[in-house]
Image (cartoon, rainbow, N blue to C red; front, side, top):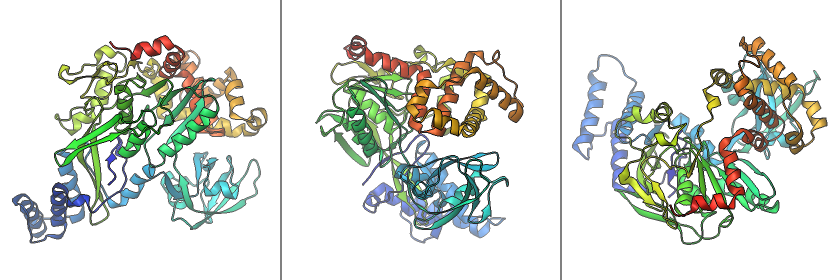
Length: 551
């Protein structure tokens, strides 16, 4: 049965299995919930009878009418919260939405859109999706959906999703205008499976170094990786940067398969163990696509769970250099169980350990609320800026498998090379621009208004990346946009410390609006200190091997 590493953002998949429910613990929990909802006279334990009796008394004698379903849901949530921070309850109406990101597809029309000037703007059609097949294009403005006016009426994102998403095989009629034309063009799009990609970017940095960014570990991740690395190999790939920053996790078996792409046959990738889950070890098969060549893994505080399994295996086998900041610290394995009404519980059934024996899970004995404040506390304590602020328990010392380098357990993975968070993110003005999505709104509007110019001058993304720069005229337009639309006064003086990043960000967002997400990262990475350090390490044989040497 598939096991799931629940992400720090609580992504999940419904993969209930009757065999697993035969386990004693799962069976007892299932019976308890059944008793709460059906008031069965049967009882297995005094505790379950107590739960049943309490709910029965509330129903029979409480002063006011109560919502039985809501009461049961809150009881389940409260029970799970007492166990650990990652055992969670998902209501039936939310299960599909929670599952979709890790399934690798959803049912819809296949467009990436934004609302610009109260009109749905098609930013791009998704490759392999139904809208691309019928001829919808980036820049099209959707005026009607199924005859309902959706432009200039204050339509919400929730309403757009409700109109566009639906069962596979059903049709939806879209009426759009293109370019400056006011004539409506009608399209009938048949909803179908639309791919959700877990690989954000794959490109060559130079003749030897490649870059791959993965945003989650979904069912399609390994297939996407193999396609990407195969393409990069044809372009001369010798060394690789694997970017797992901000990757909150996903499926356990997908994480082990990805780690297998880098490790030689017979090497332990991870093992899991719990009171009712016997030790289970997973080993590399030796069929990996990148078992040779220098490797750097980028992580940060948003790298969790499945990301930590891959990173831990690579670090413990001295297979590559880890660069960035300490990872999230989630070492618990969840298994999903479906309840009688279609709702879902994801129950922690085991802990996972890296090849050296490290448990990555950070402590949660001080309670749920304190656990959720961990990342904020790291920032307050100075950890984001200085590695000396990070303190590991001396009793949790481990050593890598080959070179016996010192590593620690009990609270995430510490990188081999620490890179502090960029100080520009301390700028109040920049944070305001990011939080209000002002930079992305301007970039979308600018890209759309100049779409024909970009098409003619920069036919391909690589031409745009190498030749286009955000000049002073564009920056002044941004200042005016910010003042007119958001009533925020900025100028070259009060934004001087972050202007270089601002220009880079605008260029990256224009690239994403006109081409692909991979082009966005290719531009944005040029302002990333961790990325630049990774390139430096891969270009230096001495530095690379020094970091992997015995301490």
